[in-house]
Image (tube, rainbow over all chains, first blue to last red):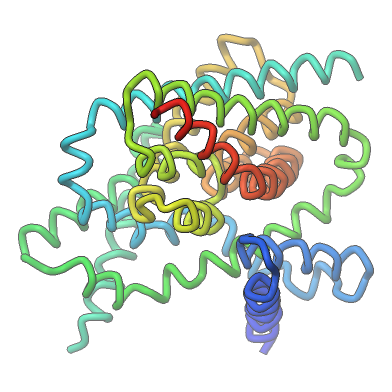
Length: 114
Length: 230
């Protein structure tokens, strides 16, 4: 019963987010709106963390498993990956490293200032 | 015997095996997500099973990404005090991350002569998967390649993060959480959650704001890149 209620709350907010995302004139992800709404519900004390704590911990600890079926989808794009392998590899590696270094250094500088 | 039962058992079983292997050897390169996906791709290729059929039968797993993303509101709320205290550095770091990422994608697209379709595929690279799919679709990118690229970005950042932190002597959980979150997505955040809740909370915040800002600026970014490609 407890886990069902937790699942209901999370799915309800996901649905709410998706529904609002459909109405909004600009493109924004439904789960992002759901996240913000759930945050507001917690913030305004409409919901308590205990109401969803167990399932939340469980989902977040096992989050990377949820991406397996999507990751397997790469199988459909072997041709493109083969043709542009070097380009994709370079963009992936360089932009990830650049962003990581930029944010790390910015944050480091900011922490020193505080 | 249903295909769903077979695919779910296989996916879960292989993932558990690789998770145990990673826990034993503690090597990031032994990423259970990456390795499980590769093994399943091999199984699909050898068994001549169409991806569509695997995708449909495992749609329950993919379905949970939405609620899991929504549930990130909890660590965010639980660390609200930390966020209030550090909101300036959080905002500045995220803005630098979003602009720096867009610039690096733009410059690389121009230098390597990528098509605008590939550029559109790459723009949401550092955003959480669920949001990235939407951005890629609306920009006319290849949705599935975006998904794979987002996941690979996460894996690269998880693997290189600790090395970069070591080189630049970063041991502050605030800096770690921010850097992981804004250069990546849910994968990065779930990794940060393993360190401490402070990491996770800051990663979550930068994930949300990075998602919102990237979503809002993506069409403009693509237009600028398109202008220079031509």
